[in-house]
Image: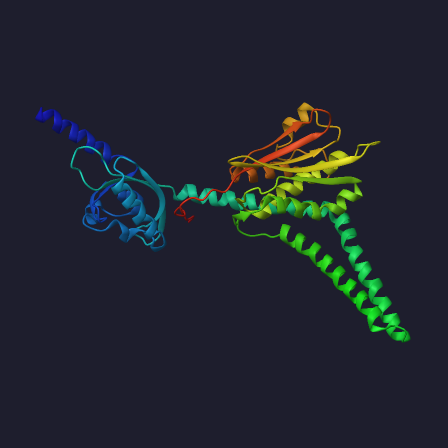
Length: 379
């Protein structure tokens, strides 16, 4: 019996000491009681040099509070694994990102402390960061391309308030120069100049917002307001295509936690696809319907047109990168849009309408109050 137990212990030790992960046993105060030899390969330390040291001494200062919280959770919830990503200092002074899983064993009885399994994910985090950056650059390129395609309509939209400002200003100057203008007559014209200037400034603000380039910033957003914003931005292009934009927005839809610019980009792509689909419709009213509906856990946005619809083979390829039915298009709009929606935890798809036309739909998870989660830090 003793020999059998000894053999099992030797096998267990051999298993732990040859694993590619770091296996650490820490006391309740964070003191290291055991460290597997793999620590030298990953973080450069000798396992015997770490015995008696506090594990928090090697955690990045910005991650220390989160690490302490996870340690306490593991101690107070035996048998329940607690997971987190933390930055640990290598012996050479650099920082490595480790995926850490800590659990207080429920057996053997009386065993105290926490067993920690750590895996080096530094390279994976680097690749993910590069992929995110590449996605952001592609997304920005698509937005620039979209703005280029919209240039004529936007120029017309800006020319209207600028022409009005010019006319009102010339009228005021003429009245003042001839001496026939009374303040009571000139002030309303000046008010109209100010209103038109604000209108032009609002158009430019919306363009600058959509073309912003920077880090992804998720915040609580009213998607109904985003839909209204996109409708205002594309109103001139819709009129140019003789298309009526109609909104059917669900009342009191909860906010969603998203990057507003990215979701706005998805909406712009879908609306412009709808306008393009309606450009060939003759003999009947062209209409594009923007809808929002909510369930207990998701918000759905739909963009429907009453165009000729899509053939099955084109519908299957719509979201493929570089696929486009429009000459001069990058063919990345819908592919980028689907990536954005999926990165937000949602889904984007296309269906044929029962009568005629096409509907693009995407979902976003509704924001729910949750405890603050520790952040992972890319290298």
